[in-house]
Structure formats: structure tokens, C-alpha cells
Amino acid sequence: MKIRVPIAVLALACIAVPLPAAAQSLDSGSVMAAVEKLKPGEYLWAPQLAPEGPMLLVVNRETQRLVVYRNGLPIGISTVSTGKPGHRTPTGVFTILQKQVEHYSSLYDSAPMPFMERLTWDGVALHGGTLPGYPASHGCIRLPKAFAEKLYGETRTGMTVVITDKPELPHMVPAPDLLGQGDQPPPAGDTVWQPDKAPIGPVSIVVSGADRQVTVLRNGVVIGTAPVALATPIARPAAYSLQSIDAGGRHWTRLPLPGQDIATPDADETGQHVAVDPTFEKQVLAAIMPGTTVLLTPDSMAALAAAAPEPLIESEPSAASASSR
Image 1 (cartoon, helix red, strand yellow):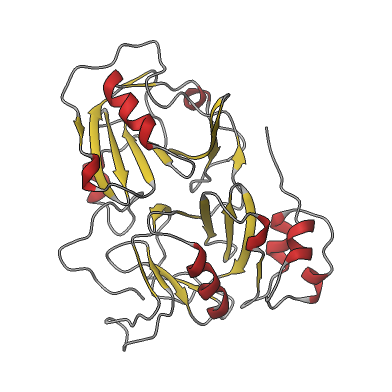
Image 2 (cartoon, helix red, strand yellow):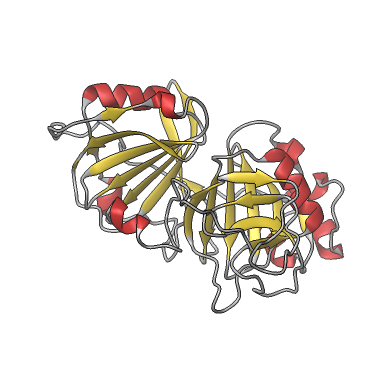
């Protein structure tokens, strides 16, 4: 089912933001309509629409826009400036690895990067900066300075950030039974569960079709691995964010990965089951909470790690972390 969130409440409730006249007069339409009306340096900000809950940030390189969700509702929309040709901002699914209110680039003449939120250890981050209306950075995602400060106050390390070229927004859709619910028996093999390595923080789960393995990260640190059995081969990457847990089960939002139609998942994807050791399954399900991200990929985790600067999930820092741009 395709869900569109009306922009009326968002447009009318925005506070302390520079708004174009067109956006101020909005009383109907979609989130995308509001996004398209913003001029470089403009943004909408209404965190009171969803004071609590899991957050998700989606950046679109093609439209040079950003949408912030909390508890499934858009609470912020902003213009951005991503990487220019030769320094393209990578696409994929990332987590916020580090935050600093005051940060300066060691690569580009000590350029100020206020309210920096790091996405990769080799130099891609969100931060306040100049927005000329087109991609102009060395790989970072520049935000209006006032918006960068507001966003910084609401985000936490480990939060999911999606960078894409697709204009579609996340929708609530049926998700596969991601752990332990398939008909196939769980595979034999060693499992590792070390939650003390990262006792708290958001959880990300990566299922590799090539490795036939699931990797569980918390706050970007690997806390568990196990072999998996798949009902069908993983043909293309698919990502989900856990929206809520109630008596009816777990409810997921399918995330818009680059080059995919968010409204029409493949039949193989909707029929996917991931079977794991029952004890490992219970441990993982006890650890997840709204905001948890699950990524199914046909690639090897080793291949992903070697594919810098475009990893799907950045898990651990390199020996010498480069500064952002």
C-alpha cells in the first residue's frame, strides 16, 4: 500500500524557518510538492509534529533535497549541496558515526564545518555550509547553517541516513519475515553474540547473500554474526527500517535505495525468508527496537568493505580517520 503524508500540518506548523512565499501558503499537497518549492538555503522545520520516536534522514542527490522523518512523520525538509563532479557524495545506507559542534577540515584549508555529523570515516559528513543551488562540495552534504544546528540537536549517533538519487519517499509496505520465520531449517555453523561490545544504541542488521551470513551492528559496532538460510537468492539490495512493534507484530518501512522503485518490490523480495539459529534469533529480536535497520544485499560484506568510498553501511573506523569536507 502506498502512503502519502499530507504536508498541510507541516507547512502550517513550521517555526523559526526561512520560508518562500509559496511554501508559506501551502495548505495541501505532498511532501515532495513542498520539497520542490524550496529555494537554495531554505528549509521547513517542525519537530513538534513528532516529539519522540525513531528518526530517518533521506538525502536525494538528484533533487538536492533532504527529508527528516521521526516516528514516520516528516518533521523537516531542507535544500542541500552534495558532492560536485569528481567528488560525488556516495549513495547507500549509512549511520551517524560521530558528532561535533565545532569541526574544521584538515583537507581543505581548515574550512569550518559547523554541527558536523560524520557518515563515513574517510570524510563524508552532514554539516552547515554554503548552498549555491547545485552540487558543490568535496563529498559532504552541506546544509543551511541554521538547519544544521536544529538537526544536530535532534539526531543521535547510530541513526540511519539514506543517500539516493530516487525521488520516491519511504512507504509502509509488507516486509519479508526477516529472521527465523521461513520453512527451511536453520543452517549449521558457529554463531557469535557479544552485546557487551556496544551495550546501547541503534541496531543495524546486514544479511549477505554471498556470505550466507547475518551481521548485527549496534552503534556501528559488530555485536553478532550467524550463518543464514535464504528462501530465495537475494537478487538486489533491499533495506527496511523498523517503524513499530505491537500485538500485531513488527511493522517495517521499506527504504528507497538507489535505482529502485520503492512502491513495487520484487516478488522474490516479498517472499524472502531468513532462517537463523533459534537462540540467535531470540537474542537479536530482544535487541531490536523502532529505528532498527535491516539490509539484505547480494554482495559479500568483505566486498562491501573493499568498495570504499561507497559502502552501504560503514561499520568501523579506519586506523587514521580523515577529516570531512
